Image (cartoon, rainbow, N blue to C red):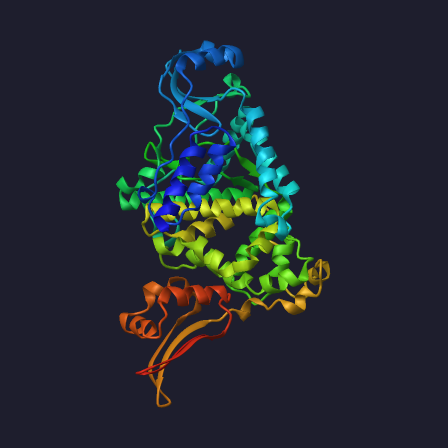
Length: 511
């Protein structure tokens, strides 16, 4: 059955990714959702067939005559993507540039595909969950309109470059950053040639770009610096400028000229100040593990919690969900590859409430989740320890963005809740268990007693020693099954397993 599913997945990739437009983007989403640390274990997506050089030159003649006149040479080979293709080129003054050309007729094709997609989505389980397809469809339409306008991408590139120049000083050989690191983040972003670009054609500096897909060949120190840079840059832009870099996947982030680099800013979305402030407040309260209810933070971020029955169950899972999301940022040690397997943890925690969560949340919030997913995928793929906690703290400390709302009891926030009943049914953050305890009791005495932090549930299979694992196995259960059960209960205190074996009674509980 597993091999049949793998074959079906592969065929779906090949069918969707060989096309342009939304079909290719949908394939990218399916590709990015796969669990696994390294991309070499996942089949590479086939790409659309590129336009010929003769066709590109004809398009330039009509769409960007100034650019065509300025170009002395265009490489006949191209890198293809969902909405266009990129050629290496050279201006008449000898300057190397990248030429990005949009596929002809793409706007009409994307609109047709989007209409089909929304019709198909209404037949999915999401409809029963109450997902607002109009809101999500409008957000997707707005995003695609940005991506299809290369003058907007040129503006986005300049904004991203300005942010990077403001917050990232040039790399120097003096001690800077957390722990006396000799590394100062610097992110290279291509400069657009605005005067030669049009809605369908974009000219920008040529970067000798090496995508993160090839990170296995990098030196570990370079790879760790790259991850710190990308986390700091993307999260810093979000918190300080309210800008969401929505396409931070492995093909768009990497290295160039010895520095970390990011390309393809077709989507660099603006997030409202109040939404960023709510998000920043949620991040801070989760990192500090304050004893406050989490539902108000999600409400401030735009979640509709008016359906109290659905949110009663969901609200009790929020502490565990946030624990999973922020596990890599707990510090002070280096975050490792296994810390970033967040997707499976989140799905296990939300369980049947996943659709309630999606249905009640605003589209921009899931854009942030997509960014985190891309960063976590990069961390798993690169596979080296790095200072994720330091990167997040630097991103939160950048000046220029909105301040977090401090939503403490008595601050007046309680009166702004959409449904005050939620204050009584959703436990505070302290409801999360603090310890995971494994006990083997024989004749009323502990023969084995192991205690570890409750968040150890996220890596239970790796942390239990062989003796404890064999005792669990003797009950007919596996460590993997126990881990799923722990996450499914939202890490709330209580007994998880009680089983009698020939050596005594085995207890596993959250306290």
